[in-house]
Structure formats: structure tokens, C-alpha cells
Image 1 (tube, rainbow, N blue to C red):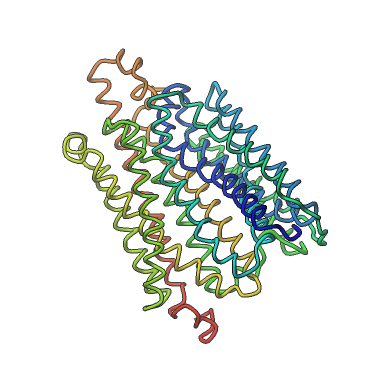
Image 2: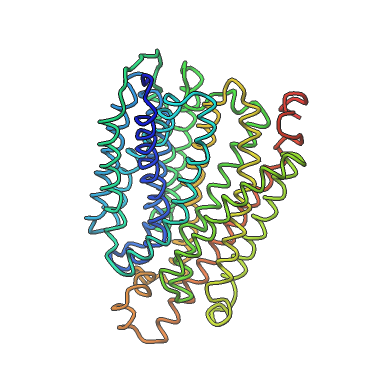
Length: 498
């Protein structure tokens, strides 16, 4: 716990927390628009989904572990370790000379990033009394909204005018500044709280998820070997569930799955994470590789989605007050499905129509609807979850974030498998068709007819990806029926299972 801080000192600690949060938040958005350029340089398009999955998986699984460690050994020690590891990962990513190296370094980033969000938010909770904590929440929300808007455009600017390693090195000076500010201004007297760390559960969960991800993402290369790999992953996951039942402090407490509201929130967050990654990871490739737009257009399209999310979320809170949680969530689900449907239909249109008529505006409009739908749904599910959780609010909130990250990881894996299998089916003799189209040198060396053939195959494969994204969006929309049909503040009067 932090001792009482003077107002100026507390403001500086808060500024350090904001800087640390921004470095992690922007890393999830700045990379997306740069990936087609990185693929053109490094090759290895089949590992594209792993660049995102490795980061999200390691971050998600380590979040609850860092939370326990922060209680045991103090906030500063854990935060310094996590932030330092994150910055090392950032530095290494910029030096990656292959996609495999980039995936490994992204995993290192994720292990460090898992400490930053929970520990910085805990430091803010330690430093501010309850009333002032409420007042600083809008500033924290602006960090995530700002990073979502700034990240894609900044990533596009860097790769178009500078060099792609800078998208990773960009975070290093800001992260070091945060470390220095914490070291100077945060005075901490650790209060040891008795906790146990479910390290075995975390290891089993990561092993199970990683095995499933390998089976999905490398399905085009593994063939029938995916069956024993998936079977092994399933057995490890069942072992994880058994360990969780016996753990005094499990990663995923059973109470969070018995309550209808909390169950719906977790399922909805899982599916929403997958739908979000369907746009974030693959829309830039569609805009650049198929429609021939610039990296800046791709960055703007993702920024539009990120911009619509917080706006829709703010509007949703006002709608909830006048209607109910479920009514608001259903509206968000409808908008999400419409946006996903528009994107899938656009991608499935003939290539000539897409290039001449659609440009980048219609896909950007679809991204806007998807962001708005997710923002509305997330607000209704998050607020109703926190009201229903009562005494389990802290772990319930962490679990919802965990489920969204794992959903994003699996969504990336499933969609990446769809893309890889589609390309392998349509272009069995081409090693890396996306690199051939995206790299100006390789593209120039190909006949025009061959470029056309590759582009059509990539477009058809991405259309399959967006149809699956629509299916995931439908699952997320279905989960809103588990949201309670009551107004905010009245949940316990009706019971959260109604």
C-alpha cells in the first residue's frame, strides 16, 4: 500500500500510471495497420495471426498472477519487472528479422504487459479515496479511447514515412519515463496480504490454449496431426478444471459461471473479443492487399472503429437509464451484426466492384458500425456484471477482461486458420501470396495476370474470414439475452438470475 501522498506527488504518480497504461494500450492498436508492411518485409504471412495471439495469450494468462504478486511483494517491484520486460520485448520486436522471431518477441511483450494494467489500476486505487477515484475514471477511459484512435493512424504514418521497427521502439522512451517517475514519486510500504498463486492452473491453461492455437493456426501444415493435438489440449484443459476446483484462489472462480448475468457477460466478452480481432487483424490486409489502398487509409478505417466505440458506449449509459440493460445490449448486438454483415458482403463482392466502387469508405463504415455495436454491448454487459457481482466485483471484472483477451486470441486463431486453409486450397503452389502482392519489388516482377489471380484468391479467402467473423458476432449478439432486463440500480430487487 502507498502511504498518504501529497496532492502534487499524487498527480505525478497518476501521470506515470497513465503513461504506463498508454504504452500497453497503444501497442494493441499501433501494430495492426503496420502488419501488411511487416509481412511484405519479413514474409511468413501464415504466422500473421500469431503476432497478435502470442501477445494477447501471454498477457491474459499472467494478469491474475501479477495481481497476486502485487499483494505479496508490493506494487512497485511487480510493476518494474513487468514494465521492464515489456520494454525489452518492444526493443527486440524492432530487431526481428523473421516472423517467427517477431512472434517470440511479442510473447515476451505480453508477459510484461500482463503486469501493467492490473498493477497501475491498483496503484491508483491505493492513492485515491473512493470519491476522488470516481472523478479520475474519465481520464483513465480517455487513455484507452485515445490509444485506440491514435494507434492505427500513428502506425500508418510511421510505416509510410519512417521504418516499421519504430512502431515498437516508439514505446520505449515513454515507458522509461514512467519507470523513472514511479521510482522517484511513488513511496510504498508493502503490506503483505496472505494469498496463494495458482501457478499450476495458469501453466495448464496456457498449455491447453497454446496447443489449441497451434492446431488451428497451423492446420494447413499439420494435416491430421491436429486431431491428437486438439485431444491433448482438451485433456490438459480438463486437468486445469480439476486443479481449479481444489485451488483456494483459482484463476476463474466457479461462482462467476453459476450466475446468469456473470455467465452471459463472460460469454459475450469472449465472442466480442473474437469479432473485434476479425476486423483489427484482417481489415488492413483487405484494404491494402485487395483494394490497393494506402496504409494510411487502413489506419483511418481502424481509427473510425475505435472512435465509434467510446462514443457509442457513452450514449449507451444514457439509454440504459431510460430503458433496461437488456434493451440497450440488444440494440448493440443488432448494430454489431449489421456491421459484420456489411463487411462480409463487401469482401465477397466481385473484385472489380470492390476496387472501383467500394474504395475504403464502405469498409470503414462497416468498421464504424462494428465498433459502435461492441461499445454499446460492452457497456451494458460490464455495468450489469459489476452490479450483479457485488462482493466478487474485483475478480469478476478481471475475469471479464481475461475472457475478452482469450476470445480475441481464439478469434485470431480461428480466423487465421480459415485464411491459411483458404489460401492453401486456392493457391497450393504459392508459398506466400500476400507477400508477393504487398512487396512492391515482388509484385513488379510478376505478370499482370498472375497479380490478378493472387489478388482474387486473397480476396476470396478474406471474404471467408469475414463470414466467420459474422458468425462470431451472432454468438456475441445472442449472449445479450442473458443480460438482465432491468434498469441500473434495480438488479438486486429482481435477482440477477432473472
